[in-house]
Image (cartoon, rainbow, N blue to C red; front, side, top):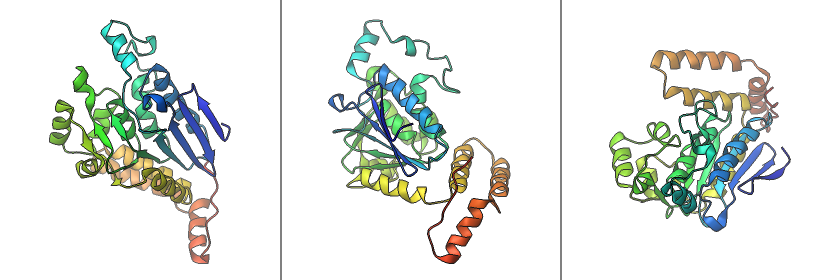
Length: 274
């Protein structure tokens, strides 16, 4: 990947010193989701996955919003009995365990490095689910979020249920999904859907990404694997997974470098994963 590129005029990617930014880039439509956006998000994630020197990703939206959800033209096509062929067979697993729409959100969870989402404006429906795919979510206090699908007679189907279950209580998920009501960034923190509410979530996301990029990439990737797996493993399996990850790290060059840098009081110089 070059240092800067745009996929299908929908997602802009930049890369610098181990940190990538993926920006939903349809600001005139509040970054609403159409078939081209679904494909571009999935492709962006796959391109980032191929960068061996990737350390962290910042995910955000251009213009006045993170993502307003499915665009009105797509809703009109559904109402008219039409639909994009890429989304026609929702049961087809085209991207590992996911279909295309699910991959647009799940790809961020599945990346080997942490993804920090910066949410401002609105994150409705599919846009909310894409934000859930990140490992960390910084939101503007006045941002508006919603599990909006019920308004259109639909259910969350972009990985939202799998992602929400580890963040919020079941009754909170049910109440918000069944009513479709919007809630603020401050409320999202209270519910468990957001990490922190900040006046400038994008600046904070960039700062966090840079901080993570300075840590051992071996440990960072192992941590993400462990936390991802913990949602589906019992305690015994998690304990064994911890031990296996630690056994691979202890004494490896990057772990030794972390110790030396700490003792010598200097910035570490980590090698990229193979």
